[in-house]
Length: 141
Image (cartoon, rainbow, N blue to C red):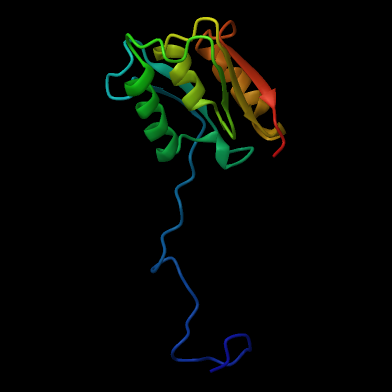
């Protein structure tokens, strides 16, 4: 068997699109979500993959946002006066959800990521009019 040479091998064939479909190209867009009704008004998020994979909503972020909204949303004051930091925020989905649905009075809420995501995070904070609630910070991890 010659895996790295030029010889054809009946057991090892190159992968093609018939085996693995290429991922769809996500076009820039604005997405709105209430996280299955956990928020009374939707959070808006600009998604764009032009500067990296952080520019889209990931299922793990949705799951974490829902957990935090269920745990600390509505009538809970569990986040009051806390320092909250979202690491590797991408567009800031989780931090924006917390800002929209949790009582964070007296708290500091930071969404952080690398340089490539700074513009998107800032745009999403402004899109939701959360400039007084959410701070965007560079954290090159």
